[in-house]
Length: 141
Image (cartoon, rainbow, N blue to C red; front, side, top):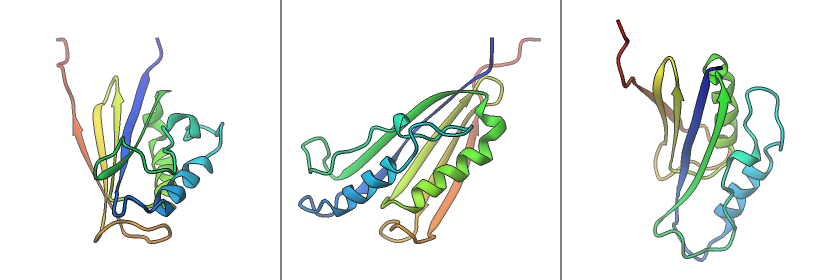
């Protein structure tokens, strides 16, 4: 059986003014600008739960945009995936973003992006990323 990798996470933005839809519209447009099919490694519209522009009852103080996909050994192309994800983030409003990478051989990696100040705005370069690694289970001897 092939190595499967699971990638999932969310992008969070603050709901500053519940009557304002500009931030939501901009974030929605950034996700809709992703291709429906992409060269390896995939980062496409279908992996995202793309939010509506209308202010709904589903969010209290934070707009949560979640995503997920299953890949064949994406960890070998992880730098390319990260570059595409950061390109997406650069065109969005957000406060933080988290990506979990679950691999069969290398355990689970959690990547967290945080913005400086009150939040990231499209085009600004104020992103900081950190990675945490954990491995559950043990090697059979």
